Image (cartoon, rainbow, N blue to C red; front, side, top):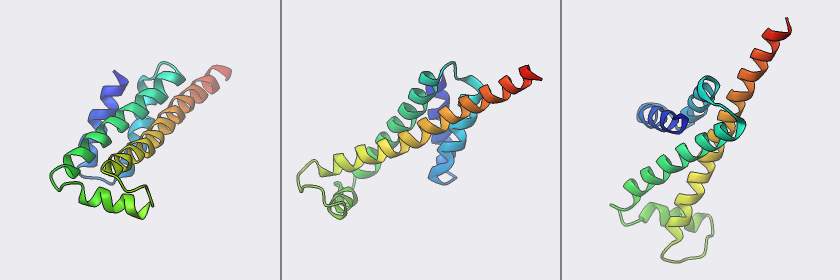
Length: 120
């Protein structure tokens, strides 16, 4: 459930806002709905990884991978017919890590606040 929430809300908000909106979305949704640290991180990571890979494919396939191949050249990746795919995976991993750690931080913030309330 958390995976779908993060994916849908992030996808919609990224149409209008900068890419880093994934961090507050993952943070707040994980603080609200995550059940464990593993659930929070994996849900955040996979949600953004999947939507960024799909978005990358939607943008790169129609233009015959021109931009992705140029980015691969800038990153000095080995020149091959699949270098554009490596660029997509790298961007998906970067976005996934940002969302995964944000979701994890959201869960830990919720636990810290609830722990603080019970100690009073």
